Amino acid sequence: MADEKKEVPAEEGKRPAEEKKETTSKEAKEAAEKKKKVAPEEAKKVVEEKKEVSPQKAKELAAQKEAAPRPEKRKKIKALTLQEIEEKLKLVEATMGGTSSKYAKHLLQRREELLQEERGEKTQ
Image (cartoon, rainbow, N blue to C red; front, side, top):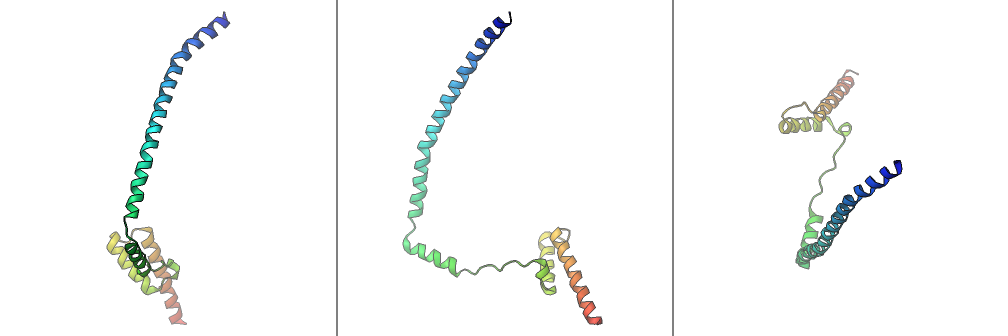
């Protein structure tokens, strides 16, 4: 009795599922082939666009990149002077609309530390 139950439902249940898998795998293969055909054409367009730049223009662009001033490296808050911290605080207040950000709070804390150091030097 147990043997009959195992064989009958197992065979009937697998047939529709196998058919579904075959159709989805065929569709997936077709979609992959379409992508393969489209991809090289798009790649050729990108390469052609890059080649359109004349060698003279390429040299000019390279010269501009080299001549462009590099932005200053950002200093850590510990390395900033009191004057630099004041400038940064003004900038933060203008752009962020206050001193509620963590960055602004760190700047304020460092400013207080520097002011205390100055007060300590004056009293000695």
